[in-house]
Amino acid sequence: MSREKPKRTTLPPVQENIDKLEKAINEGNSYGSQQMYKSISARYVSAQRYSEALDLLHSGACLQLKHGQVTCGAELAVLFVETLVKGKIPYDEDILDRVRKIYKVFPQIPLPSNLGVDDDVQELTEALGAAKTRVEGCSSFLRAAIKWSAEFGAHRNGDPELHVMLAEYIYSESPELDMARVSYYFVRGNNPKKFASALVNFMGKCYPGEGDMAIARAVLLYLSMGNLRDANCLMDELKEQVASQELNFPQSDLIQFISCLLLTLETEALPLFNILRVNFTSSIDREPAFNALLDDIAEKFYGVKRRNPLEGMFGELFKMT
Image 1 (cartoon, rainbow, N blue to C red):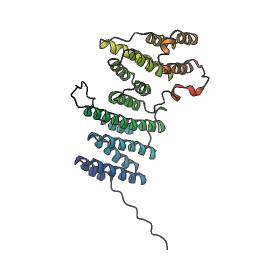
Image 2 (image 1 turned 120 degrees about the horizontal axis):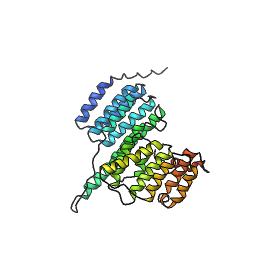
Image 3 (image 1 turned 90 degrees about the vertical axis):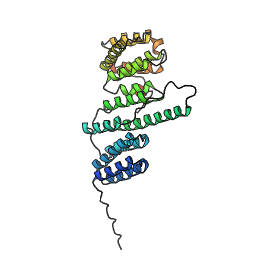
Image 4 (image 1 turned 45 degrees about the vertical axis):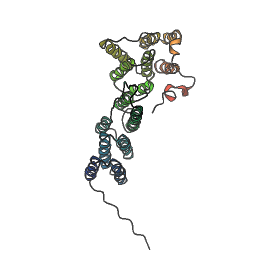
């Protein structure tokens, strides 16, 4: 006696579910709606109706984020990207625009400042926790989107605009700022002007000695990728923005080294490159990672092979993705 095959459930047009769940969220049922977004979208995916699953997840991510439900919104945003991968959806401007729309509704909330002695410590603790949640959620979403874009048609490092989005969000929202991480994404982006703005802002609030280090790291990261054009563009933008804001550009041996290095790399003068490294050893040694970056630069510009290829900068020290 053969078993009767289960009947396939017919899925309704996706707009019906979008409207129903939007109403539920607007009525305050974010948690219940979250479970429905996940289960219903999974059914569309199982039926290989990827376009409708994407419509549902995109709507849900944006709605949850607009209502301040960052954890829920970020989860649906990541599911949106995972569905792109499952459906083998190629990278194009339309999909990139949908990613942009999700990114733009991630909350950007300044941390409280100038707290007095009598202010509520719990309020600050909660604000820091919320900021961490925002950064982790947005980072997970954009890192997934970068990986998808690299796999399905964009630049081998992923779409440059997505890298800039991630760099900007980490910079503006992180309760504990890590400029090395911010720089990692900016140099894979396509906007040295925005990177310069972030660095100028950072120089206005960092401790003495951190400003020139941040500039040097940024330039060396560009150069380690063989990108002399954007390294020069960044320095020009920094000088222009500092001058327009009537600030002081950092003056140090490290900045002098960076300026000389940029000029040297315009030529095929490997001996001069090596002399610079020797003459500015004490400045370079302020950051252990700088020597590894300079090894990468020597390989990119002068073909100098590493003794150990595994020592590459991006294989170890700046492995962020």
